[in-house]
Length: 282
Ligand code: PMP
Image (tube, rainbow, N blue to C red):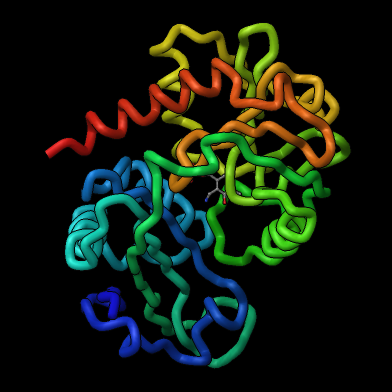
């Protein structure tokens, strides 16, 4: 039985309960974060907590716990559940109140977190994944890491039905991001990724990947690109906190580059892993 954490208490998962009136359940009125656990330690959790605080601020949910408190909860969950490689998920909703769209006058946020194992270093998907192209059906504030994710649920279900690992979303032909990842392409030795705006999530792994590429001396531009440009790129890859850097070798029926992980995606993944190992060593 996993140990989870709910509103200040560690408890077995089957004893964790929230109200049917919780606004997370009624409206998707909440925000969340997912951080990796590597070598038994949290990876870049401080950066995830900065983004959590921003998401809460943007939608007016007060911060019931400090970053220090969260770090302690997250590390305790990883340790108590014996997670060597995996993730910690945490969520804050506006809390339970009689159903009404506008913010309730009196409401206490609901906060919970749990941990689970996942292979990160030896992720079998590092051999290359396929993505499925779908229109981006989301709202105008994709920079907020909201739990309201029906568009991504549909996008990722369509990807799964098409036999793909991830959805690649576009708006009028311009790639926005993956269903739960940021997307990158490589052309003539230069890496490209879409610039930050309200149209995409500011991925923590995206930030770190930019730093890793810079350290490796690989040229990088934050510039939007089309689905067609991705299909004709030399390489393509995706990033997220719990997949690190994964080469994309097919976009629907189109083969990218050689059809195998490209040398730059490989170098960036190796650089990312080396940094993760360095930051989490005992
Ligand atoms: N974009 C979207 C839409 C996502 O859901 C995620 C993962 N939560 C990402 C990008 C990647 O963000 P991160 O690197 O912080 O996991």
